[in-house]
Image (tube, rainbow, N blue to C red; front, side, top):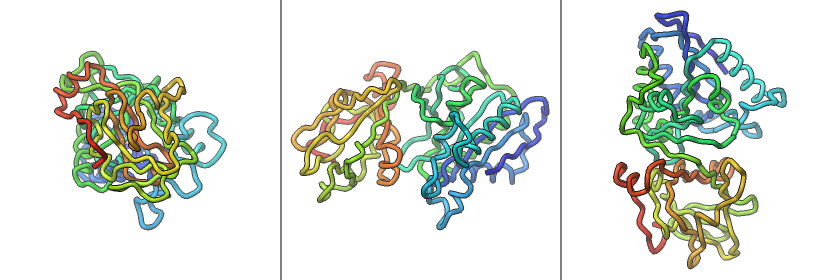
Amino acid sequence: PTVLRVAGRDRTRARGVATLLHGNEPSGVRALHAWLASGAPPAVDLVCFVGAVEAALHPPGFAFRMLPGRRDLNRCFAPPFDADAEGQVAGEALRLLREAGCEALLDLHNNTGHNPAYGVTCLADAACMNLAAFFGERLVASDLALGALTEATARDFPSVTIECGRAGDPAADATALAGLARYAALERIETRRVLAPRMVVLERPLRVQALPDVTLAFGDAPAPGADLTLAGDIDRHNFELLLPGVPVGWIGARGGWPIEARGADGADVSRDFFEIRGGLLATRRASVPIMMTTDPAIAKSDCLFYLVRPREERTGYAARTGRAGRPLEEPR
């Protein structure tokens, strides 16, 4: 792990940038490298934290979220910090960012599925909305406690996680670099007025996971022996308003309920949002999925996806985004 402090025109102020908290998400560190190589001076000091370097270097490179047998670094930013190496790194990074007196923090990530660029924050105020607008037009206001970096710093300064797009996509790298350059060059962060009138805010995410004993597969047809087969292109639904009756996967021969969906209160509300209909797992009520992945390892070790709800009426969301999923006969 590495911390760099780049001198700005105003040495009395500082902002933070974090990247590579997951070793298989390279857009942020590529953007940081390209920005440093450009020689552009930042408006204020830029404190840059590069996290899961060992995981990123593990052969074949940029392939592992975290080292095998180790904890996800972006789940370690909550005490205690002395349990393992990841906790110690997280605790030290927090100390350095706070001691620097950062006035804001961006944490740059990638997704494993197809997503537009978007932000995630604990507090969707004017400052966070304006920071997210450097990268896209969607912001998720999360009340989940996962141990993420921007959760830990939310009370210290405006903090936004940026999902720049799919890992390995040159467009995601370009999005990360353009947004980072704007953030670094900005003289002042507007904290009172929202300067992004097209920003769509989604709230109260639910984390949808496969139950521990469920065998999971992805494909265009039910996989033999799998308790739940999700559509191989399920990530096409990311940020789409799914109306009731949209199938997302097939239930296996063993039957049984395959998932849980929990919000900040910890209650499982999966049966409120999904139902089994004719051997298919289908939506029961309107919602918007994000971070749907087709990577089985991520789906089992982290989650299948999140469900969020638009701050505005669902018809308004569909009208503004142009995306609404229709009921289908079966996953495609």
